[in-house]
Amino acid sequence: MLINEKYNNLIKQRDKAEKKIEQADFKARQSKYYESQKKRKAHSRRLIQKGLYLKNILNQKSLVLMKAKNC
Image: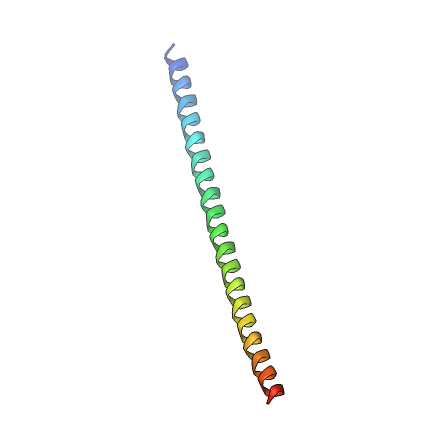
């Protein structure tokens, strides 16, 4: 019986260790996902800001050209 108990304890310890490893792996994957999501959002935000900036510059240049033609 003593050997059986030790064996069962070892199996329980192994199961606990595997569960901890799975949890750590899940947290690592989740963290990586959130980080990449933040990077994508920041990249999209920068692209939108650049687009708006360029749109404003083009509008200003077209206004200047229109004024120059009217003069």
